Image 1 (cartoon, helix red, strand yellow):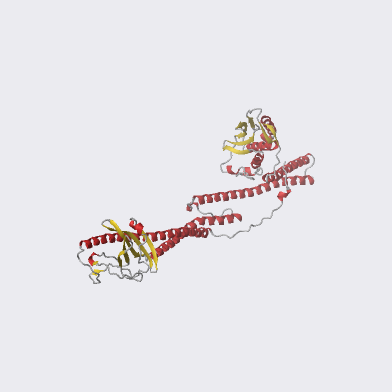
Image 2 (cartoon, rainbow, N blue to C red):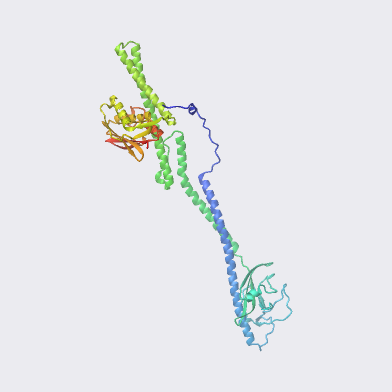
Length: 514
């Protein structure tokens, strides 16, 4: 019924794969977080520096424009005053009472002609560091004033952008000179609300506070990165602590310890970590259950093998020594043969199940008419003494209901399920075949004592024989696992549909012939 490939049973050497260099999870994430945070903060800091520089420049330009407008209004009034007092003679003076407003000779300019001077009280108070020049519409300089300490490269011989300013446009310029950076604005010069020339005012670009602001930004970025690293480090430690414990637990399980120390679920808040720990709990519980099942199997197999072997040995020894003779000796020989058959059946079951688990199941499908097949199986089991007091009822099914299945496999499934009902002390078994959604479903219902809730998850596990002593003395725990393997090999399923102290229902699903 089953075939074995000798190649699959050859021992395989297990070699460890070369492992690449690893980094602790805390270090891995904290350093990457810090790098990402630094990159983002650096980008924000550079943008902030750029914005501060532009904003500082914009404020100084606005102040320069406001003072230029003020100077335009003031000189317009001065011109009106001078025109109204044209009879008065105003000559150049350098006394403490008057301030000269004339083109002053510098290294960039030499003036030979005298210019007009006005009373000092009419000249607006201009802070240090400013320079302004007034040009008429032809580009000739009318007024010049400067209280800047260093004006190299700032003094204008001719007005730039003259036509644009005369058209009413204000011009801003950032001028790089030998004495540093200067800001210059050019505005229309108005007399009687008419553009009569241009006024150019210059002031040194004040960026003394920018290094301090830049340093403050760098310090802030460093503090934020340090605080962010500390927060991520603490959070990563709280996250990796249960993972490290799980790693140690997995290592303990790999060495055969199925009760390792696991993290306390009450102290873990992360949902994913809780699910991982819960799954690990379930895995260790399952491994413990499998280990107990393996121990029970060894004890059960030892018991099942020792009892018939001891019986056979004792009976053969009695015959050999002449303790029993004649008819009694023949009876002992028959009992020994029966025990030998039982031993052979147990060994065959173990070998067959090993073959099934490795996927080596030979399936010979054939068309099976369900109604006559079920009747045949029922007649066979009724001839068995264990079924003599069992009532088996078969529900009526369509005569043309058929499936494509291996006959031997299907009979074995039927016999195992019926035998389980007998071991559950059932007195009535009902077999119900029916077609549902292009599938053939056969239900086995009995009135036995059922399966306890704590045993239900393990009934299809190999070598599981239940928790009661009575069940542990029966078989090897391979009946339902073999049924499931056979059903799956033929494209079907088997499942426990319902169980209670009053009975159990198993459901077998088969592919129906359309």
